[in-house]
Length: 75
Image 1 (cartoon, one colour):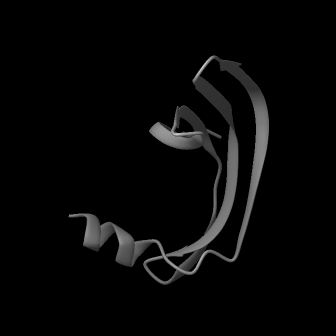
Image 2: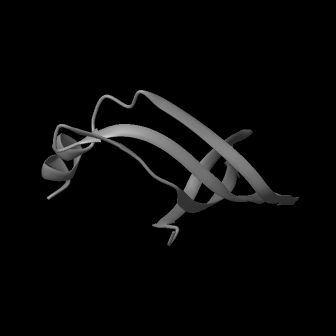
């Protein structure tokens, strides 16, 4: 399944992240914002907006993504 998805979404031509909220609480942190990628989908150019949240965890002094969620924004 993941290989099929990866083949559909490849060769990103641009990406911008619009940060809306963030915080750090000890060894946990989050970001919430809007992703603005431009990428061919099944060979056709497409630009869209994703509402994205990422949760980070500090492990051995490094920040790592523990969870990510993204969904499309209705126009």
